[in-house]
Figure: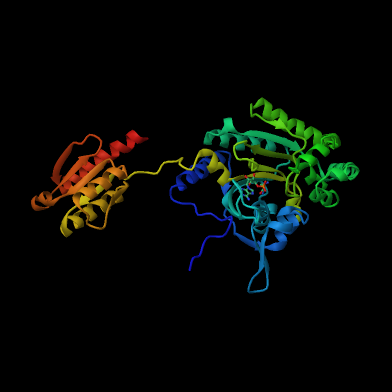
Length: 425
Ligand code: HAM
């Protein structure tokens, strides 16, 4: 049998996980300082949750969801994103009514059956943040600043740019969509077949089409900016004002539309030009109607999600520290192995990383393994040490060594390893 992983699904190997942890730890650290608490959600939900929130006429719902009927005849879907589930959890667990001001973050796999390419997978991972309970523009500016501070913390801020837009409220958008549809119909001959169809079902998405013909045809399309009501325009002005005075770099992009239907007012994307066409490392916006749509009271909210695979590609798969053991044990005979085993375990109990080979290979081979492990010390139970009831500690950097009895050796190792780790910090 030659069973392989599914197309678009990846194994994240141990050589990559330090980079993943770097990204995850940076997000937890920065989001935590901004008052966000971690939430963990199920991977499988009832299908209508996503259809109703993301929107029937979106690519995700139309073509990309992993949906199936389970043994109990329920239509279920592997989550394609985290916002719908977060809002469901917020309403279902009573927060919407009893404690509406909440800031949560989450991380984990999402599933979309898209065409795989660099930075795009069918199982991918997001780290998302959602802020419930504030309609004020300061909340939007705070969320965008947090995303920027994360990029700074991770060390990628010089290689990304922030774009922001306002989609206005539902009535601004419906007036705009009507005008946009008229405009698109007048240029229907220049649009790709996909966009011709979108003109009726989801005209905003035409602005996002990558085809140069469609881009050219929509160059002079009406701009949503001119359709914002006074309140929405003022809200956006204040968001941009705070970001400017806080020196969070951003650019207004009036053509930015999002692939999910739940947004209103502020939307934003963190972009890079290092990943080809998959240029968004993070994206989000306001979704003031979603809590009500899922049966809660009208609670304003906003948030964003970042693509972890894309962030890992940016920091480099080799980033992060793969920690070397502090001590590597080298031994001869069964007795040597027992003593090595015991001392190794005592060091681990003291909080240090230690390693040994379980197979008694030649002394030379074990010393080579000690060297390539990067350990600071080789702890040697050779034949003469065993005969004398002693153990040798060799400093791998300096080449110096001392021979002691086991108890002394343990104290010396603890002391030296503590010094090493302080130097490492
Ligand atoms: P989204 O734009 O669909 O928004 O996804 C957010 C990010 O997830 C993207 O910018 C990208 O980095 C990553 N991503 C999406 N699809 C893939 C894929 N197939 N492979 C790799 N990475 C991918 C949302 O999901 C919203 N829930 C964001 C949000 C949160 N809005 C408000 N709160």
